[in-house]
Image (cartoon, rainbow, N blue to C red):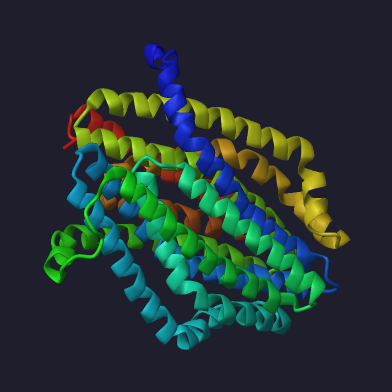
Length: 443
């Protein structure tokens, strides 16, 4: 282990993949923070609550299909490690085909889907109205948003983190500019925030396809346009992997959705304060995901090359830097928590409420880093069933902790969330340790 830690080329490899993704990923919650900050300075808290609930529902809808990125990253990285150019082209085409199929289904059924989703919410009439308004506009970005997941996954799988970095930074910059223009300049309020995100998603699609073409030319790959038989070849493996990751995502989103809806039932100030803190939680998640993405790409490449040495180095180098980053995040939230909250909302009651629950957020980076890292390991290894089982155990833990502590109100929700993150890491660590000792992880 110490030899790997002293290996400067390993650290350069990890940081070359992770830093671009950390920088680009931070702009994603930054975009969410801008949404919340712009809406949070309007005259009523229900605008902020509406964006929080509506944004969560869009995240639930799109994140449930996050397997499009994860499966694409793992399969592409393994094809890259095995130097299989046909598989690299095939994986991208299959991913885009699936993304467009799911987009068509979402757009066809988005109205009944919206009614079903919001029927479970106990939010106030005003919050629910603006949440539905936000959702009904944002859903039209589905074809672009889902295709962008495939593009991101494919570029990462080919060990290119610079293109995804610029892709995310440019498109989120467009989103932020339009957010300020539509909400502050044109006074379109919630509708303006939603429309800005739709335009940004389609801008991202155009830029992303251009990056894919450049990377394809660099790797001298065969055409992405292929016959139906070639497109469907090996499709069963992709579908099985996507099924397992979908079920995993379903469990994940059940917990986050419950937290949003249950928080909404505790009052407008609670749902608004949770919106502020959840924006910071998303910042933690996206920041740590940068190292998880690096792990996915490096592990997948090592497995494709069937190299135990590459795999060991990937684990050691990425874990070291994840510890450094998570410690810094906890320090920032501990020292500057109040100032960060005040930047997001000028509503005094929301600020006071958010400060009460800030300690949970301070502890979150060091607790949650393990689940992000281990997710990266299992995505790179395309071991979907293990990820599915781990998330199911974590979900049971989440609801069990909340049920036992529900008399403590919002503290019960945050205790359940941190327990959920911890159990994800523990269950995957036990599984990995067993497979590593039995020498079956590379199989």
